[in-house]
Structure formats: C-alpha cells, structure tokens
Length: 268
Ligand SMILES: [Zn+2]
Image (cartoon, rainbow, N blue to C red; front, side, top):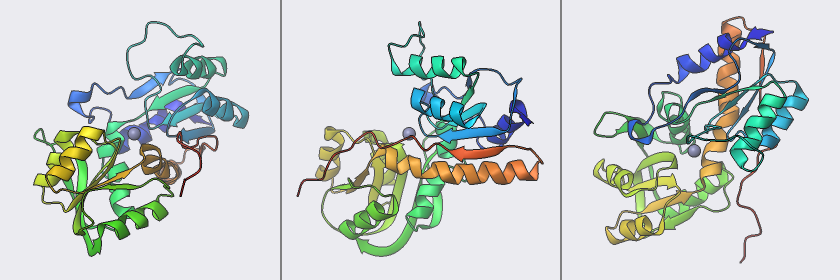
C-alpha cells in the first residue's frame, strides 16, 4: 500500500498544478476524496466517467488519475442527473479519490504535446509559446511530405479514422501541433506566425476551417479523443517508473472502459 499523498507527489512533480493555461480557469488537483488514504492500485484515464469509476472499483483501485478534470465548472448540486454528478457520486460511494490534471499536463515537458510531436516523427521540437510565455503547443520539422500523406500517417499512428484536412494538399515540413481543443483563431494564428507549414489539432469549428483555407494555411483536424487517449498508456509508464524509483508499492493501469465518443461506420 502507498499513501495517496505520495502518489500525487509524482503527478505534482511531473506536471505542476500552477502551470495551467491562465485564461482558461482550469481546475486541476485532487477534486474528489482525500489525500489521507492509502491504495495499491491507481486507474489512469482520459475522462473520469461513472463507468470508469465502476471499473476502478471492481479492480480495487483507491485512486483515479484523469487527464480531463472530473469537475470543470462550478457546480451547485451533485446528483445522478448529469455526467459530472454520476461520476462524483460513484467515486464517493466506492471511496475512490479522483485527481485530475489538464492543461498543465498538456504543456509540461514529456506531456501530451511532446508525445504528439514524438508520434508525428518531428525533429528539433520547440515550444509554441503564447504571449505570456505558456508552452501551449509544439513545432518541429520532418521530411517534406504531401499533407494528405502526412494525414494518412497520423490516422494510422493515432488509430483515428476521422482525420481531415482543410486547405490545399501542399508539401509540408514544418509542423505545429496543439493536442486536443486547439481549434481557435488565436492558436491557428500562433502556429502560422511561428512559421509552420500546417497545424495539427482537434475541435476546429467551421469559421476557423474557413479562415485557414482563406489564408492558405492548411490544417490537419484530428479527434480530441484519439489525439489524447493514446497518451494514457504513456502516462501509466511514466508514473510506474517514478513510483518504482521512489519505492512506492502501487500499480497503475489504464482504464479499459473508455471509448471514442464518435462511433459508427465510415460511408464510402
Ligand atoms: Zn483534452
């Protein structure tokens, strides 16, 4: 058994809680339960839903570490009427604590953005920095390739059946990436002004697609889930290695009950 507090020290060292996106009012930290308990099993997931909590309970985990905050906006009631309430109630019922990271884990060294850049085969990876110095994304280079070929590679690497392209099928070499919801005009502009040939992200609304096409800056649009879920196994490895180094008796496991929220057949 290990103290939950000692396990959380690993997360806090790797992705410090105060290094989140400042304009975003993020909500990271221990969001449900107590740091005082002990456990020998931790479930790691992208989204802490009631099904993930039930899975963790069956496996005997006393702690869940999620990438997306289990509670994001301020809530005035916790009931079984909504997705947040159901997850929080299930955690409380089963005596499971929930720790959530978020943009701090996106930005940190070895976090989601770095892993995306690695999986994309980028070299010379540098942070894509906002005006306030936040390392919000990454930019790097690879061998020149047609955008459509690059998108097909990403589809295979990330197991994402719905990778789209906005813009001309040009040759790209310098690639910018922001994992997850990076589809706003400001971030698209940040990637363009950093000198990227294209920008890879998810959650891109129609007006940004039109904007990118209009200024001749191609986008590769992935799915938020596939772009980030792939990191969960990587995080399990990072946490396991660090726990071993510290002599903690605890095992980490990626949740098995999560699936892509968009499903259905692909129509030819
Ligand atoms: Zn996300």
